[in-house]
Image: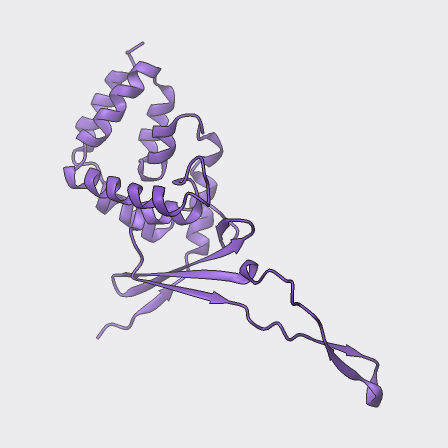
Length: 213
């Protein structure tokens, strides 16, 4: 039996983050922000070069180039994201860390919620034989700020784990601090769930859109 192993994606995540060009994503274009993380690099580049009229044609061509099941999966995941992560980002629920991973990978196989409950911290006073320990009062401390969600995906022979840490008042962030990422599992999910069927013909069609004013 193959042994399941944990894969931590920090290195791949950081590399993908540095190359994905997230800072160039126009927040005012709702369609683009919703589809950004499932788009291929050449699609993002082409989209930015198109006129408003051509972008509407692109949006139709985008899904025509994929299996119809891909659109159904995306719509179902987006519906879940809109309902579940609205508190994370009220204006764009799809543009938060947990939503991005859900759109790419779908629901995790397992979710664990862990909280730091070690509130009885001791304070040492004095030195040597005269040293004493007293307990600090943390009654009013916000324990939700010490809560983490562990998302676990079974992928091939691996268990891929993500950790999201809560930040008051309502934000969950990927705990590595990279924020946005496309690691090995995400790339695999993007290709297998949202991959283009005939890339050469599709690219020719997109090139033709550049002439639309």
